[in-house]
Length: 390
Ligand code: SF4
Ligand code: SF4
Image (cartoon, rainbow, N blue to C red; front, top):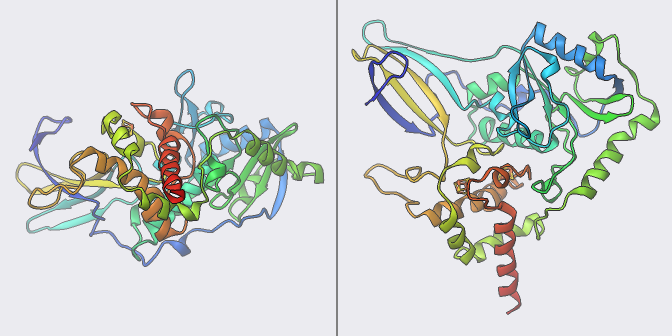
């Protein structure tokens, strides 16, 4: 039991970790529900900065707009906004990734009533919106979430699919800082998942049109014009400069990671990292590819009606792997710490064919204990390689 902060009424909490909402209409997979953009653009246009702000203003009026905004001197976040001038075009990373547009930190899944009028109504949010300003690494993460939430187990999560299908996504290119390692995980020049993709150029923005849906905002803008051949080459030059500036690297081919990590399952560096880690869960909560959640029912005192809510969970929390009977499969901190690297670079890499890490650098940048994901990974890899030559 715990108090309801809104009305002071005690409520019963039933917790079901990682469960989907059983009352909601599911679909076989989400794959066919999104218009997939292709790797290369259909056509390229040029929008001035003013023209782009006008497109954003129209998005605010006609639908809803989520975009990066400044939250502090150096911090940014994706927010629902109604002022197009608040949109930050130039940022390195937000604290929470844009996955919150599809998988919010907390969301109500359904309302239910018991007794003679027993009923359960799913709460699906399928109102159209524009998700603006997504960097290539976060686009890659959205594609990975599409797989995890839409296809992985053959049943799509209807809440995720409803929001994902309602979104028009506009990507934008970026420049890295010392935490970024997108070039190591093949996400630095991703386009898939976006309807439009922007690259800054002298005249404003080179706009790659990637889907039919992406044509509409341009058609409504009086500002757009076709790009010249020189302007069309801008994304390639921007991408090359970005790659040149990335300084953090994983010291291995991706395909070799699962075997190398498994060879060093008991690596000393996991113990050293566990000794520093606070199990605070910040690293997973800010990660664009983490998708673990907890589900809780809140029922009124008469047990007549209630709601079901889900919220982010973390494999770094002490009770994450507790099962019926009270056994904890990862009761030791070192087991939870190791699990984060194994989950991203062994288990899901093998299952999905790509690491479940897109090199955004958030977990390292925002870690309470300043633990670097790539530092730890490279230490394990160095041990594995050393062992191989012994
Ligand atoms: S593991 Fe870290 S660097 Fe990789 S995607 Fe998640 S937050 Fe970004
Ligand atoms: S953010 Fe850092 S301290 Fe917190 S759980 Fe993750 S690794 Fe540990």
